[in-house]
Length: 343
Image (cartoon, rainbow, N blue to C red):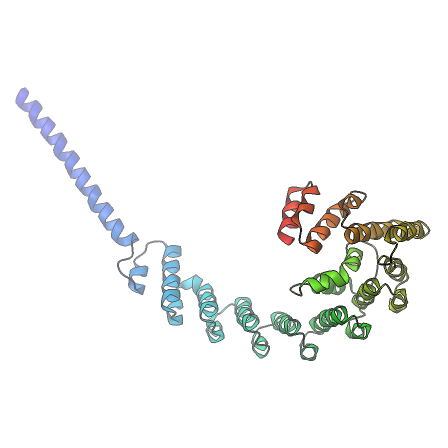
């Protein structure tokens, strides 16, 4: 019986060793399949999972700056070509991209990075027009705006440049180059982008009129905005005669007096005038309070606003004066984060 017991134990251990050995063989085989052996397409193709295989090939293409390798990346080929085009700053690589949108975005990225207006035409619409507009605005060259295929982007281009030049030179003649379209989307887009990347001069020249853009239900055009910003900066209500809509013209006249010597009395008078504005009274009051808050750097004034305008007011203060401490007054966490990132 003891002999039998020893044989059984020996057999059991032998089976265990055999199982362990088999497991090690499997692990070794999997390691060979899962881990690239060397730096080549062949090593990437030994990877079991498709996503890992294509990622490996794309990484190899980028490492070697070799566009031909991207062709082996399957569904990741377009992404590979785009990344390589941006890395090498070579728009010709974009031509290998099959997806039309990705191709357009690739050309857009290279053209705008290099300020290459002519290259924009190789992108499909609306990317080509947007690309041309962005470069023309960056260069401040209104002549280039006329060559943009999209009429909307052409108007946006000339409007942004016109407002910037008007505000920098304090010359209202440039406002004539700004769109008088009543399309709210176009107007809001122009106003949102007029100060982007333009430096602090625009903030100082136009921040009072920026408060107007945050107040709902006041109709005005991009050209109106141009005249309002100059009227405000120059304390010249005569420029408000060029504003096309009555509500905006009235507010322009009120705001243009905000820079005179006795600003406190002016705001009081402006609010009194708003009270006499009938159905426009609330919008007028909100705009004046916001103008006062920003002009006097008084966050307390923002607290008098409701329906989310208080948050807009704090954000405007923060972005105008590049001071994130104003964001602390905002209770909503996401809005506060946006305020901080924009200040």
